[in-house]
Amino acid sequence: QVNVVESGGGLVQAGGSLRLSCAASGRTGASYSMGWFRQAPGKVREFVGAITWNGGSTFYADSVQGRFTISRADAKNTIYLEMSTLKPEDTAIYYCAAAVWGPALEASNVDAARTYDYWGQGTQVTVSS
Image (cartoon, rainbow, N blue to C red; front, side, top):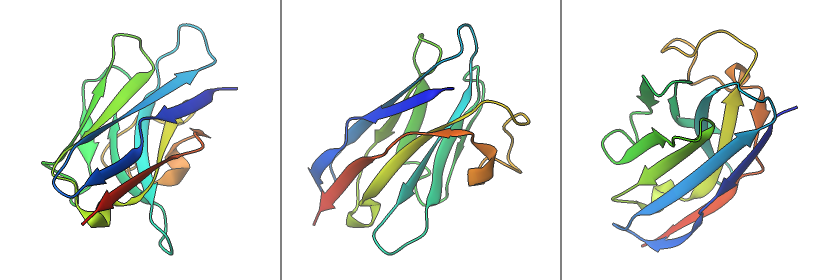
């Protein structure tokens, strides 16, 4: 079992910045590829971005490219989502997920929810206009 916990959500004005954190724990010594998804009210969950287990590659949705940055802490399974130039349409619950059992993260599978095995409970981000 792997536990995934997000933190850092909140209320911010349009144009502002916010940083989310995510920590995954459970399998000693293992490093996981991890991703961020979000779900706005009345909409389906959508891919935001992801980072490979060693931090070597990052992937982003077109809607956040250039505004959001994913990074990995020295503690192997802690990642961050730095969000800048936030827009009201970025308002959503943001979920972190860990890809533990499946194939390596790559462009062809990174945005599919089924790629990820464990999910956090989500953290609310609200951007006011």
